[in-house]
Image (cartoon, rainbow, N blue to C red; front, top):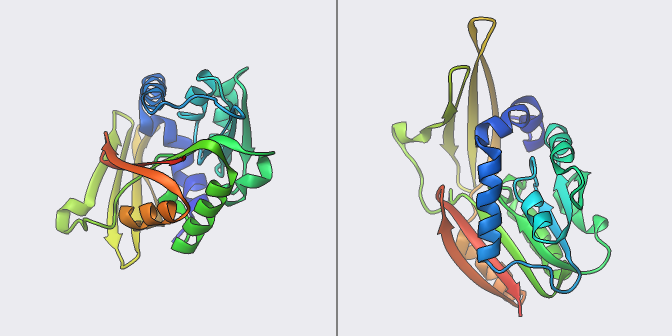
Length: 243
């Protein structure tokens, strides 16, 4: 079983943008979502994007007026984000999101952790550590937004554990889920048509089964006002504000 970093380096990182599809449309949708949530620079103008990927949220944050610190652990995705960002005020940090506070001087207006990044952490203790640092870093009117898949409440069984992620004439990405008590093993299978022949690459890694109610309790215990809803793609979205 690969680590999250190994899995992205060997398989998902190089095809992540292909997996997303129309990146421009995704960024426009994300910008509209952030606007609808009322995100705007208030105190410091600084935002942090944890697990920034190729910049699908970091760049919309910059377009909304933030100066952005984008933390990404995959070298391929961090490099892609640097190229995409151009002259936008986005500083890309290739590293562990658990150390994000080392990259921030002073309070932060907005912290994002989108696209199932939270479930990539190694343990619930790591999630608690991250949330503690998030709360400590938020400015007086700061907001934390996270999305993640709810592997906790529903456990797929039988053939429903086989999922088609995306396919076209040259690539087919599918995954298979294998549940344990606190984690789910994700087995990704990438078929690529190279030089007229289909080739298969396989890599597996583990995600956390995070209960939304548990996450909400952590944030409310820290004094944040929390809202939960579901967004397109079936992701749980948590919006926590310091009031």
